[in-house]
Image (cartoon, rainbow, N blue to C red; front, side, top):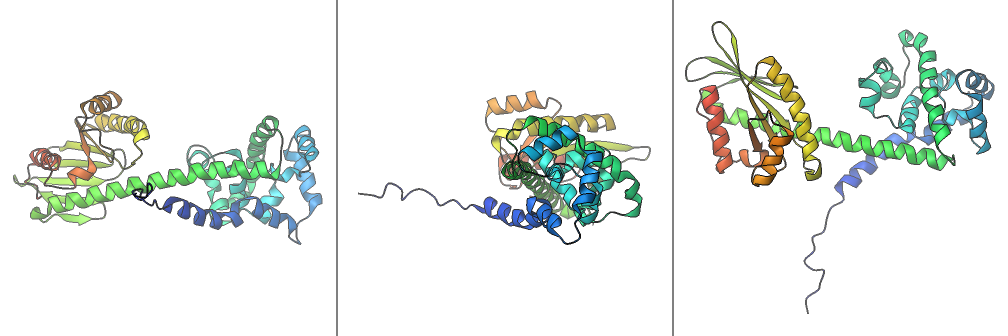
Length: 331
């Protein structure tokens, strides 16, 4: 009688191993252990902290935190604590549930990223730290009012939830960059017969009509291809590349592609392509939905198939791009 479990594959927990390693590296810098070590240091003066807490934190919330046996600096940043350990700005950011992008890139806090990244406060930042403490403390007040009970365990769990999202987001960024890298390498191979000049993320060549074409990897769009005429630059095709492999999130990624295509169209591109790492092309139903999510996309391609010039989709991709660029693409 065969073993009923003999046909099951052994799955590798590579993601969790990677996350664990990164978590261990961050634990001593941004999590509760970092605050604890700062408080336990010989230089730490509770009287100074208490004076600043009275200045930056709401008295009612300080009293509520104390009723659970915790001190105010667990939730509220003060100048003194950030001065001793600037890395702790990351502690408060994680506790409040803000991703790095949300906190540093979409508001006025970009100037403070050196605290979390380098553990230092330059002289130019000193005058702005009180306003930072006021702002973050007001956010902390909202959090304190809404959670019950309050404990170190809850603090740790909230930080872990933010880190999980942050780690997943950085993984998606890595997948996206890998897909763009593969696509760029594909183009260099396809255009190799024209002996293109490759400089950084840009490919330039002369097509069959001796017109200069340029392929550029950037953002909005991920890849743009243009042709230089005597009087103007002709916008040939803008390509959005979505390297995520999570099928359930593909429609959100198509929404992001649609926004980028809107920018490209405003720049003068009419051919707007979307390359995915999830196959929406084969099934007519998913292809229909893809067009609904990104109606401006003129062609959808599945990256894994266009990387192979022997597939029908790979051949179609090369023929379409070659006809647009006025060049014969190598397989």
